[in-house]
Image (cartoon, rainbow, N blue to C red; front, side, top):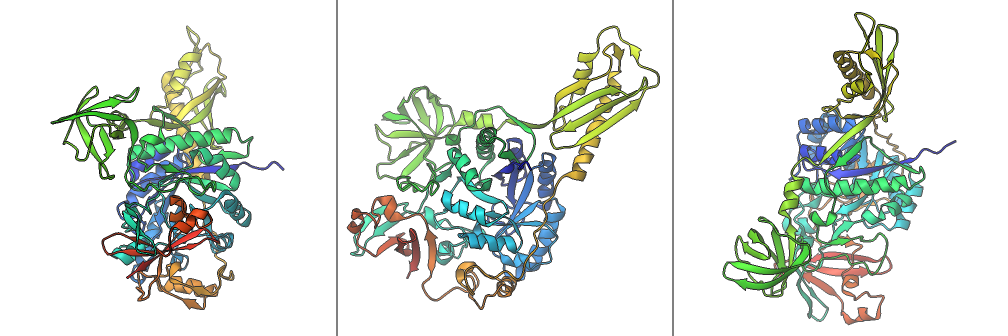
Length: 618
């Protein structure tokens, strides 16, 4: 038996319906966006009508729409969430990305459920458990190595989803309470205050400040575009781009880059892989990931390389691309020594590191070659300072226009059934076929000139549809005349019939059955780290053998010191003081992180697991 290729999916983020449709046009196989509530990004909520609009468009290409309902849910919200999900189902949502196990206990339609990265699925046993209780796809932690992903792939049969690009949480997702404990704003409720992006002092056990005012927990952005083949070989089927708060230009550029890379991998896979949606994407620009918002790039734990830098200690902002240095500063203007090939434009955004080491920026009001007049003169800039461009006006203007078209190739066959009956057969790569026919008033007449090219010109007019003509097999004698109106009618009716056929046969994903007999993979004690915030989640865990359940901190704020983060990222490693090296002895424990604004974290290290944890101190 011939083994079918494994379908690979490029999963793109969308803040709103407009961006979601652009993601599909630029090559995404699926998009994920927030619902009107409980979507883990309060600034990226969408109405049911907008979600239906996106679903209808995505489904034309066999692409999927996933909606995030991946915050923890409070008891008084359960019925509203249940109602919300029913609306999402009827709007055409293909699957929900969820964290709270209460959703498995609600009266839901048979919509597929995906286990969010917020579920913090660190072991293959946990993944098997989630599969067996009803999840159809599992989002892996960003912290897994290739070998660890392979272990997951061997344990489960459902598709595995993994991040390939975008911002990184320093903590295992779903296992962060730093924001809530410090400010009352919870990442597990979609209100992350980004404690990891703040500057900290690092203090050793003697009270000495080892590092002052650096962004010691702020990770660089993930970029694994060169590692997609390794990810696929390890077992990843869905390649996820982070960024539900990013703008349209970011999504267009990033999706186009990864779609092109994924196509190359599939072409070289000898039939092992295929794309999970249909259509050809034509773009008008050359994708360039360095132009999109980024804090600098890292491959993080994949592959596990001790030389890979993970953090951006100097700034959590986008530094940009180096363009030159400052040669002169005068009242109201700056002269630059530009690198080769660099041209500036009015409206460009430039950045630099101030004399105190902090990063700042300014906008160009007018550019005259290397002579620029800023909108306001920057502070802390000096002659010889390196200048970076973090906003390219010409690029942004070009990307604001229409930059992609996505179409499905059609095969057409035009044939004469009889002297008065003409038929047009259509086939597309979605596996759909349709036929339209017309009976003429009289037999076809002889034409004065050959008709083949004229017929093709009429039949290939598919401009306002999502199809393009791939091949035309014209079996009607080229000497016979077929009025253009008849050909156009055949084309329109056949397209309508083809779409009806697709909507009837389009495969849909249903929720997997929930097996109540499956025991918990981690024993019978449920701690605050499981984020249980309602009675139905408690019922779920008890039904699977839990004997002790501790509530989430959001509903039962603890009086004792708790762990607020657990990370694969290690400050010691990043700074060159790994405890497994001789230099590790140069830092006297215990280490403390201090914001200087009342928040301090005790930093602990478990070298046997290569794990760093933070506890908030009083």
